[in-house]
Length: 237
Image (cartoon, rainbow, N blue to C red; front, top):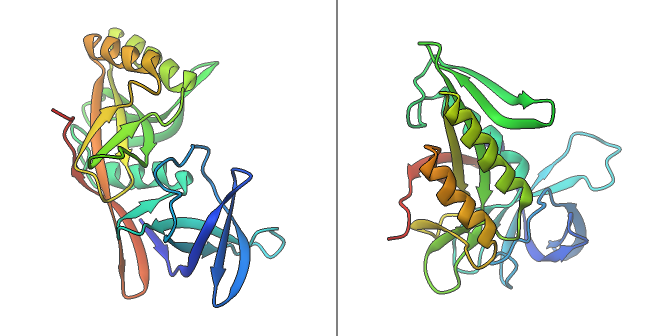
C-alpha cells in the first residue's frame, strides 16, 4: 500500500501511549501514535520518524507517526491501523497462501454476537477461509527473531479458540502474523511473556488452525513511501 509523501523528523520518544514527540528542522512537536502495543525493541535512541499529515484541519495532532527508521538502519511500521489494509491488498493480489485472485474478501466479519475476525474470505469454489491478523514489531535482543505477543493478551488467546472452533466446523482457519519490521529472519512465540498464549498456539495447531507468517517490505520510491507483503518467514528452528 502507498502511504504517500511523509515528513522526516527525529524521534524523541513515546508519551502517554498514543503520542510521539518528534523534532523537525529545530522545532519539537507531538504526533499521534496509533499503536496499542508496548513497542518493546523500538524505543531506543537515534531513530528517525516518518509522519503523515491528516487532511482534517480540526485534528488536535495533525501528524501521525507511520514508520520508524531505527539506529541500525532497519524500518518498522508502528501505525498498527495499517496492518489490515496491507493484508487486504495482499489478499486481493493473490499473495497469501491458498487465496486465489478473485476471492471475495470481507473485512471485520462477524463470527458470533460477541466475536469478529479480521477477514472472511469466500473462494471461487465457495469454500471459506477465516483470517485473524496479528501485527508484529517485537524483536529478540540477541538475534534477528520476531516475537509475539509483546504482552499478555487474553484477546489473542480467545482468537485461537474461536479459530479452532471454526476449523472443527469444516472451514479453513488461519492466524496471519504480519512481521512489520525489516531486520528479522524468522519468528517464534514469546513463551516467556505469555505462556498461556504459547500453550494456546500448540492446541490450535493440533486442531488444524494454520499459522501464516509474512514479512513486509518498507521502502520509498520517488518520494512515495510503500509498505507491502514481501515474503514468508519461517518458524525458528
